[in-house]
Length: 99
Image 1: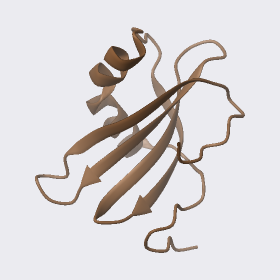
Image 2: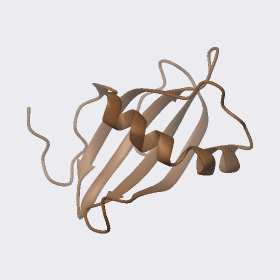
Image 3: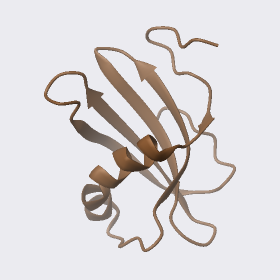
């Protein structure tokens, strides 16, 4: 099913590209949450096409702990990834929705 412009697509299993996007903002995530993540693995993602791409990403950060990231990927400037929001204290079953 194609993603409509402006709407978030379905939840998908994260892939290598998703992990690379998360890795680029890891220092910022740790600064915001005040944590140093030994485990930091993208497990699910959704995206929304706008004047760039908005990503919602669920990461496993150890034990039963998960975090959600909102990242905006510019289509210009070399597809720069900008962390726009972090939601910690999530679980494996927390829905991946805009926050």
